[in-house]
Length: 401
Length: 225
Figure 1 (tube, rainbow over the protein chains, first blue to last red):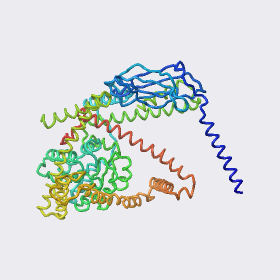
Figure 2: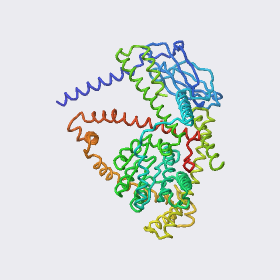
Figure 3: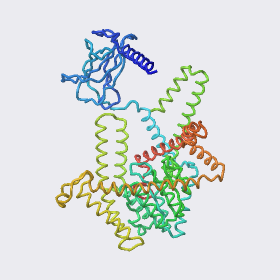
Figure 4: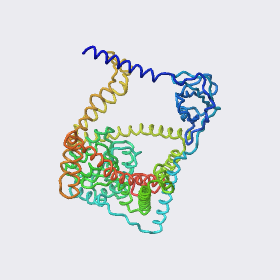
């Protein structure tokens, strides 16, 4: 039995050894590479960049038996030593990045045999400097969209200025703001306004502060206390100004207390813990959680729910919306947060921008439907109709841009 | 009026347009401008933290002075702030400073600075404690929302039950196709709804930004209009 095993393993190892040898045998290596096989070897500048990249492309006459590779070298003008960039196939392209736009570069190809030994001969490009561009051509559609959007906004704002009345659908969460503030007044308890956990660079925070203005004005009119705890010092500064101005507008500058708009901490869960503490100690009748929230959203919302306050939350963070919907009485979902400013103030100029948003959304829906329509027709015809494929490519290009 | 209204609007408009242009220009000059603005932001943010400290001290000092309910906690906040600032300034943020070693000869250099020590062994455990509460809150929120009161709520309950079972090994044990069903739910109906919301959000963001750049939206400057 032992002898049989021994024989089996010996034969197996001989077989494997023979296989490895057969693979590594230099069947096609030659000492000199025929560079006339190189059909093209071009060096070009990479477009839409900051002048730090060059593109090298080479192509060889197709010969399936040729198992050689090319070794690509870079030579900086003024240097004598070439830098190896790697081994590549006989036809390939390579983008050399992180270059200096003040210097010129040339590239060389040296053939290597299947053992990795460099063969005689070399082919090189001329010197070239990478160029810095002034426009990202791949973003042209995006720029066009922004321009069209801006023009639509301006046109609608001008239309509204002339007196056209625009219809805006009912947003329950915003309609209830008055009722929520009124409830706090009746109960003699404060209103807690949380402007989110993010910084001023977040558009959701700006949207939240835009809502804070009308809310603070209403609260000042009702002579109720407003508490605004902040996580970011810049947001705190802006919130102070917004509340102070709103109290002045309501004719109650004396009711404004600087200590009611304050900084808590920039720690995410420290902030959540502090807000929960305020909800438990101060027992606000109304909690308004509007802005950008992350994992702390549920901690705050559940603490408010347990305290028995009426809660209105709003965020554009899709992952946090289910938590707010579960724990709050009203939830302002996504875009409604950005519409709130116009909805509450009913200012004609802001209403115009709201309508522009709707028109653009309609346009995106139309594009998606158009794409779906052409995709179905193209599938019915087996995907071979050139005209349909072109249309689909154009729509795909617009979406990708 | 010019300082309080017009100038901030002009500054917001100028930097808004400049940042949009910067996005479309790949030239190094554009990147230099962007980096410069980022540096300005860092400097401004650093100074605003002084205002944050001032706000915290003022708020808690007032609470202690007026002896409002729970004023003792305010005392804890102020003492903690003082101690942290003290060890931060003398102990260095990341490596023990030589000042501390000169002041206290017995102080031995260590790889963990005193400030990092307070962060690692006090702040991090406290944050983790609050974070762990999330699990309990999630259970209570799920209990409330998964009551089959209406057709929509029943749909939510059924979907949630399928996803929950399918996400644990038990699901695959019961029926091998469970993970594929979950993938389908998350990839198609769920993603479609999310994208619908996200398209609206993105447009809202652009509209809000344009409103600020064009000076249509002014509430962030304070006041209603």
